[in-house]
Amino acid sequence: MNAVIEWVIFGALSLVAIVTAAGMIITMSMYRAGLALMASFVALAGLFILLNADLLAAIQVMMNVGGMLVMVLFMAMMMMDPGGEMMWGMKRDM
Image 1 (cartoon, rainbow, N blue to C red):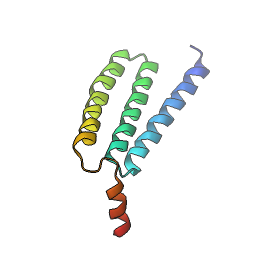
Image 2: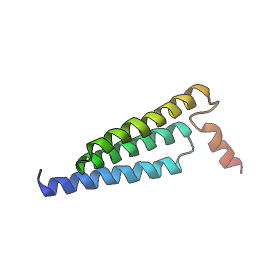
Image 3: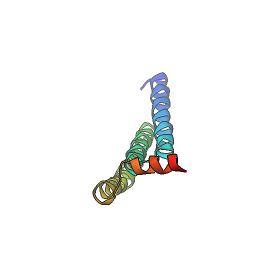
Image 4: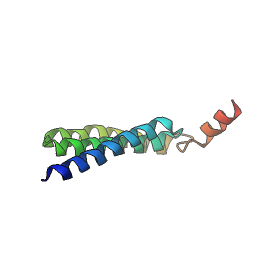
């Protein structure tokens, strides 16, 4: 692969990983935070693939994304407010 293309892919995946990790921090919804963190983990797995560390990419997706998927599904099924609307009201009332 061309070096310029690799740098562009590296920059794009790094930007996605950082932006979605920041999105995980600033959201009030546990559901959206879980989805943002899963997107960050997938971007990180893409960086591992770019570095020819395919096994680390597979482990990243299977372990971290799989664990976050279980957490997100649990939040959607069991939480009273997985979307975070009550949290916005609490922040406003404070």
